[in-house]
Image (tube, rainbow, N blue to C red; front, top):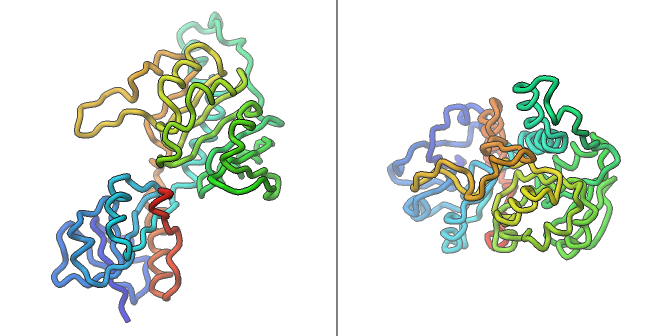
Length: 317
């Protein structure tokens, strides 16, 4: 029996990766007599959710779930929502790149050295050593787990705060519940954020929380900017209350409004901030990885096996 799947974007490469009993249609127009069981779309128009009487699964072809899609899907309780984690390793690599660059202040020292040579006032600025220090990771999904593995490769002690659960050890990693965050922040040499934006994570770290970090701390954010209050983050960096930050996610993005700057606060004026324009998933291998992950989900469905990566609409991930 054929598994009928419709994908709003093109998918020639995906067609080559799926089982023979998966029948794919593509395009932003509804197929004639739609009967698809699975829809692949990042932001599907509502008509695609109502057109097929057989639709039971929506797959978002990337990691995060847009808030508008989450809200809309609550009106369709019979359609399960899934995503893919194809970008976990590349996002984790970006987190580690930002961690190293920010903790060692590489970009600002590089710029000074280019301009002033050996007269650069920052050339003798000491670097932070990672080995033996503590990395506190917020979020333990696919990305958080990959970051944890990489941190251990740098001989960091890894502590993780997840949504819920009592303190336990998983190998060398210490896992905590969200109620332990306040107690753990003063221990964090490196605070790495890989949380999605949800009602509970938005504004999680305000001035009060950031004040608990030691002055030696470096913050890395590859999750969502809104997890940290913008003004509070800018102030602790501008006033050198913490060592540095490496940021790949931002408070303003181009869209319907003409936005050219990534934030209202001038982070770009600070020499202890490493800025990256949301590039974690922009790897040459990203599209190939996306296709592989999508094909895996479809092939499991074609074998009547459960589709992984089920999203809880109320938790947001």
